[in-house]
Amino acid sequence: MAWRCTGKSNEELISNLGDAGIFKSEQVAKAMAAVDRANYVRHTYHAYEDSPQYVHHTQV
Image 1 (tube, one colour):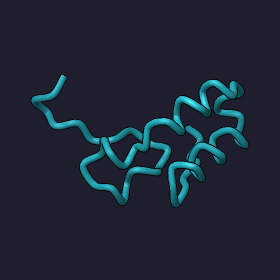
Image 2: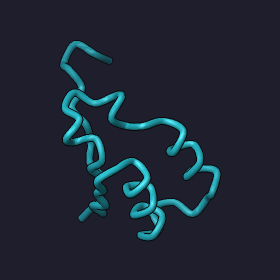
Image 3: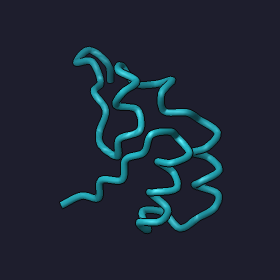
Image 4: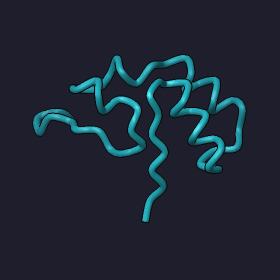
């Protein structure tokens, strides 16, 4: 079963992923903090879920 580390914000998601040991590098945390997932998802209410995001079938 995969880890599911959701958050109410990008910062909370990153914190939860780090706390769960999904990544250990501060560089990864900084890179993730520089890009808000809400800018790249179809439905922003799914932005901070630790799960695959939908990509339209014609996108590769």
